[in-house]
Structure formats: C-alpha cells, structure tokens
Image 1 (cartoon, one colour):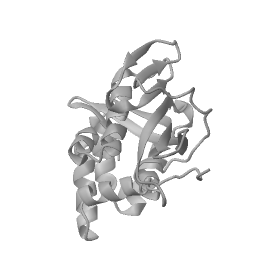
Image 2 (cartoon, helix red, strand yellow):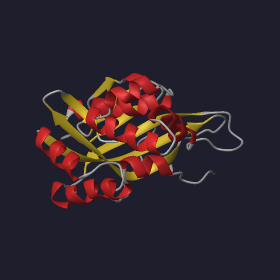
Image 3 (tube, helix red, strand yellow):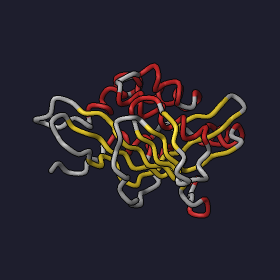
Length: 205
C-alpha cells in the first residue's frame, strides 16, 4: 500500500492556504462520469470521474477537470490555457530568474506523482467542493505567494480589481498506479483558488 502522496510543487503553487480532509470518493468508474451531489451524471473529458458539490459552478468544475486532465496527460499547452494569464507571466519571470521555465516546472510537478516500481499512473477520481467563504483568508493566500517572491503588492491589487469573483475550491485527487487494483488518494482535502474575469475563468497557480 503506497503512501498518500502530496507533491510539493503542486502544494507550493496551488495550496498555500492549508488543508482539510474529505471523505473518499465512491467507487471509481471507467466511463469518466461527472457526478454532482444531486446524483446527475454526464460525461467528462480525460477519463477522470468528478464528484462535485451541488452548488459547484459548472465553469469551475470544467476548468479544474481540464487542469488535472492536462496534468494527467502531460500536456503543458492545455495546462497553460487554464492558468490566469497575468499570473502565468509573473510565474514565468520568477522561474526564469531561478534558471527554469513554466513548462519545465510543469513536467517536474507531474513527475512528483511517480512512484518507484511503477511504470505509470493516471488520475481516476476528483472531488470538488467550495471551502467556506467565511474561512477564506484571501489576503493570506496572496501574501504567501508574495513572500515566496512570485509577485508584489501591485499585482495583488490588480488581480483583485480584475476579478468579478474569487473562490476557494477544496479538492481530493485519486490516481491508479499501473498494476494496482484500486486507486489511492494522492492529494487529500487541499485547496485551489479559481477566479472569473471579463476574459474568462481561470486557475490561480
């Protein structure tokens, strides 16, 4: 039984607000279904079965599913389309100062899900729900990035002004490793920030 893996780069880039545990998903399916708490199902892309709370915005659900599908398929171009463009610019500048680039960082982030002795893996289940808004420390989230050197206060204010909505989504992600019978949680009860602007819906990180 492998340990519950939490990739460091994934958490550093996306989940600086903390964590909370969720219940494990229902039995995973091979038909890539998306399920809400109301029991309705629909096909989703990428082979990931998504369980979302009934109040989850469909745009956010689609966005997050596309993000993890891109990670699952090692598709940097698809990943980049989900990321808030001004953040990606700041992130690129930060990485270049440190001798890297976002595509390299993306592949390294994906590689942190690898396990010795296994030829491969793929994501099977994704659970989504909103983190309680009254508990969201948005300033703390942004300042954590700022302290890490990703951007400055001006960028924070510009982002807040551009966003019509910023939500904190709690997620749990499962993966099935080649040769195993059951998927295991690889990220449990973590948080990810999403936002809407006049240009679209994006991940922050």
